[in-house]
Length: 503
Image (tube, helix red, strand yellow):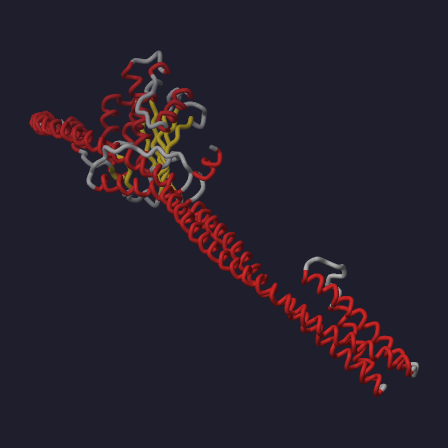
């Protein structure tokens, strides 16, 4: 199981290369064995007549030795003595491998005889040469005659031995030839059988490797025909096929989930269309109601204009101007459809509101404004300054006389608007909660932090400030646009707005 798991987790390239390598290794082994058998048979076949060749060489060495001895005995030259010893040594070397013992085998027995005669020939010729060196004429003639007799006898025995070995070698040659033919046939048979086995091995191995590819091809064909009700592969192997199967499983699952999502989306869209039809009907009703509600503001403006004209006819100029300021204030609040306004437009609204408050509270309210002489056409969210002024007036009037001051200063980066009062000051807890609510994009303060005030008072102290600061944050995309501080003497509250000059 471990080997099977190990192979299954190998790559396709590794498995194919392993199969091919094993096949090549087996082919190489069989080819090597066949080559060794054939080579051995050919070498044996070639050695069949090697013994005859050696006997021919020995005959030549003996003849050369006899001629060298004869020349030395007759002419006493240095060349002949050198040739003698050289040829003699060759004879001794050639007979080293001959049979030196009597034998019942005719060939071995003949080798034994040749060996003995060769030794006698060498000894006699050597004695004759030594006698010639000593000028012993008697020994020269005696050993020269013995040497010639041994020479003639040796040639006769070598001829007979050569014939015997030729007959023996012919038989061995035929046997070796038959062996070579058998070895060749055997090698061919082994190569054919091994080729068949290797083909079967490669076929089974490659089929096992490629079968998952055929399965994937069949599944892909079914998927192309929009048939997604197919079983998953669930393969756990880590090779390329396993990775493809796992990816295919994930794809099938994703397609099924996507189809389910499409069906759900289609059902949802159908429901939304139904709701859209209902919403259109509700929207039509809302438009009718909106047209009806527009009658109220127009009626209010017409009524205020009528009161202003009546006051003018009665020569009540102050009353006429007051009613006109009230009408302008409500018109700005109700008819302002834009999300932004210039600083000058906001300052005009503040002037209208402060005039109305002064008419209401008389000398109890003191409002001062310090603004540089220039046009302020920079845009800020609509209804930004009036709620802050209103807050300062309310808290300033907690004293016997309320003082509210609006200042605008300029520098290279910011237009700074500060609105301050002389009230008791905003509590730090409420201040921190306001900043936290703006940071979290919340629109109201928790009621529990204002336990001693009414709900309307909570709305004025909390929601109005949060609304202004949150709109500033969303418009300028910054958190350092606004701030709340205490007055220079530690009393009162100052609201600060920093508007970037490049906006």
